Image 1 (tube, rainbow, N blue to C red):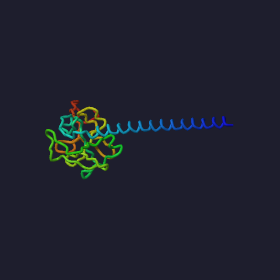
Image 2 (image 1 turned 135 degrees about the horizontal axis):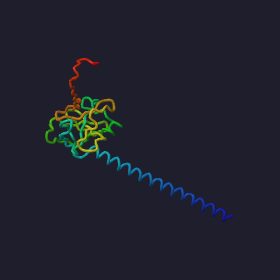
Image 3 (image 1 turned 90 degrees about the vertical axis):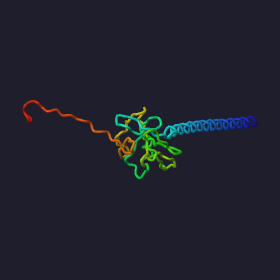
Image 4 (image 1 turned 90 degrees about the horizontal axis):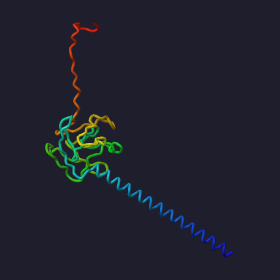
Length: 189
């Protein structure tokens, strides 16, 4: 009998050790995943905010437009009102707000008097120009691209921003007509 009792105690001890080992491994894995998620979120936040909120002008096919310190096009959202952002959640994933901790700076051609900030729901400060909150566009991969111009997304249009702080609208395509020289002024001839 003592051997059976000793064997049961040993099996119980081994089972407890296995449970503790699995629990420890699970906690370590969850901690590692949490740390990876935290670091990834910080990286995304840094790319959205940038540390240098200097606005400049850049010549594009739309004319001179506002760009961030990396040369990426800045947009205004027609749904924003009274200097407050209406772009949150998935909208802000596609159209990251230009965030700043301090006062933004104006590059050549940009009017410093039109620069400002507005507080977002999470307490961060979003850069504004002529009271328009500013955003970049996720699909503008290179400096100077204007892929978001005129897009109707998240309930309103997105426009690039001029040096005056107004929406730059793509000019309508020019069409030319040539007179017909068939000798018959009205179709069908």
